[in-house]
Image (tube, rainbow over all chains, first blue to last red; front, top):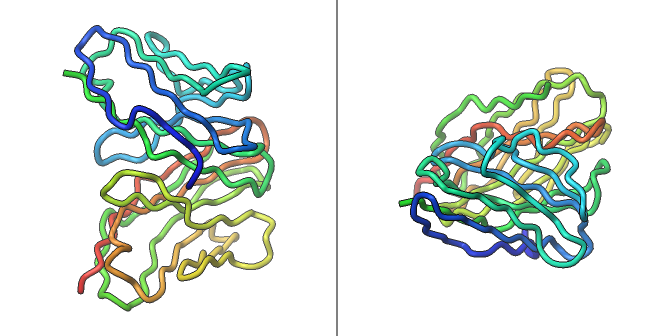
Length: 115
Length: 115
């Protein structure tokens, strides 16, 4: 688990504001995944990125949510015009590749509260 | 489509006893990986153990072992010599290695270890 860094750990936003969540993958990992966890539920896949590319965004809401993983710097999950229903824990994970046997490690999560 | 089923919402175990957490999965892909994660009350997702679909032997990591029964499509987690610190949510997850399929999670099992 060590090595995937997420910040902030906790974020409070008022309705209508923007939330930006950052994720630095483990050293040597070029694959990043974002998941959302609502209270008392499992993790739901949102988006899968490689450097500068979105591979799979089938779990992303169509509006207000976007993600990027630039050539330099962390991956960013951006939520515009937040609503109360966006309150959740957002987890980032990384892996070295998507090949068989490559373990996926998670960060400690970012808890978003919309008030 | 892939699916993970964890049928035990909650489990209790006496300290020092062994416990088995059930997980069944559904996939038509012959190549896939199975993962178990632990989520303590502090919220982080901790990787525990991995089993590849072509691995001949059941995976073991310290007190954790994975009882992989491919024909039954089950991947139960066995925790031996339970400790109070094992109290947490446990999630089973799988990933198919064909296509860009993401890691899919079950709903989790809450394990409580009793002194």
